[in-house]
Length: 255
Ligand SMILES: Nc1ncnc2c1ncn2[C@@H]1O[C@H](COP(=O)(O)OP(=O)(O)OP(=O)(O)O)[C@@H](O)[C@H]1O
Ligand SMILES: Cc1ncc(C[n+]2csc(CCO)c2C)c(N)n1
Figure (cartoon, rainbow, N blue to C red):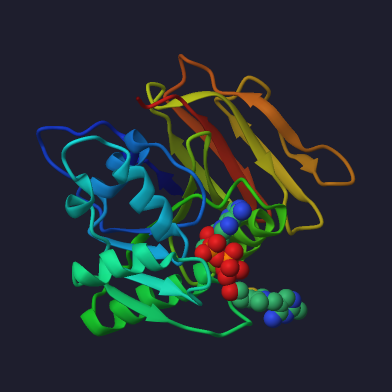
């Protein structure tokens, strides 16, 4: 059974950053400072996908007086670089941030960043993979959102854990099998969904939700569990699925 916890969304603690090995990819979508600071501090390596660098730069330029930008320097900016602004590129280059242009028109900036994490893992010769946190990717342009759903669905065969996070949602792919999701109700809101994306149908069983399934079929032609609810008294949600599905939960305002 796969166990799922989200320590990268917990408030900073005196014990320091979560023990897990996390890598962050900042996509070109809006995010708040409280969300950024939590995931940033939890991750050991951080990368901006092309225009994600503009988001980081602009968010950290809005504070009067101090310049927090220099405390949030990514390890890498990568993509076809058709979205990064010249002032942003100039600033990060002046801070010695590596900027890599990859003009391939058959892979997205997200894919290019994932490739860099794989190269890093190879270079480090590490046994353990990075768990990957995408900041953004679940809202905005529908083709990009579907790309996130599609790509993470595909990545499940080679990557153990890849999460997509926005100010509204956290979601990831539950591969076929059994899963125990540990719920921090201070971080997650009420609603959640079990989405059979990219599969004809799945047989689902759940425990710990307001509306549970028992060996029930779920498909786009039939039933899809949207607007389901977490139950405040339940510390875990158990899911059994015969095919991969997307799990999404609402995020509380972290401010
Ligand atoms: N409007 C959007 N909605 C959702 N995700 C987005 C959106 N725009 C960008 N992204 C994500 O951020 C990444 C970087 O985006 P950017 O705007 O720099 O490049 P793009 O040219 O639009 O995307 P790509 O080159 O990857 O097709 C994309 O690969 C995608 O994952
Ligand atoms: C069938 C097909 N559809 C779309 C694209 C376009 N495309 C996909 S990824 C990418 C890079 C964006 O930075 C671009 C332009 C393609 N190549 N092949």
